Length: 362
Image (cartoon, rainbow, N blue to C red):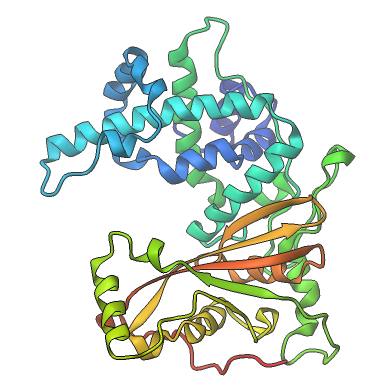
């Protein structure tokens, strides 16, 4: 089903067993849908829908596969026919997994779904460069199988939802219907009505970052309580299957230089950074990237939330600074650990450091 206007949107809501367009929009941003949309090759395989549906109906072995990319790996110089066949099988696997994930989502508690949806919304926010809220989430339950109880109905509904996601940000009624998107003035709008009190989220990371803006340079000089942020680097994990990095690190050691530290604490407060670029540059300085011809390849930030009594992990390399600043600024968060991945810098892509800003000081 191709969504063109609000009437098509209402029809799609009914088709997947939801009450209204608002429920549809919330479900489209739930963890099982976002997870599939990020990982599955749905854009490359939409024209192969008939072949994929045949595979889904006939391929009982799809349910037993853990990693489709190991079963159908990409070959060097593979033909277009082989690429099409490989992606067809992988997409069929993702549809089966998406259907299972939605079943799990329907059975799970709102609190469990909240934690997982936050994680995948964070990834989608970084990918699309949109301020998609990580809080104020509720969980409408769809109905994928119709009264005919045909599995093909479920997979067709999965296809329809995947095709609907890219259309959402362009709807004029998006902010009004969901009631929680960040406006052009960067003021967060909360949507708390109708949510069970037991699953009310903690303050929105984006809104909290705005409230803490007075602690940044140029604002108030009021002292903020210090936080501890550990930066770790696993050399063995990082150099696995990376011959270029292994070669550069070996040369550094042969020259008698010290390799980047495996464990260190940030001496600069990340909350005082103005941008994500300046935050990344601090980590680059800590890892001696400029002197070694290295660069950041990835950063995963894990932290403990006292409010939820659990640990979270987000992509600190690609997430927007508002989101990261909110995580660091939330007084309920602690035990910050940044796991760094390095790679050899390609100078043809520009300089190692992104900014000319000096690192922030206390």
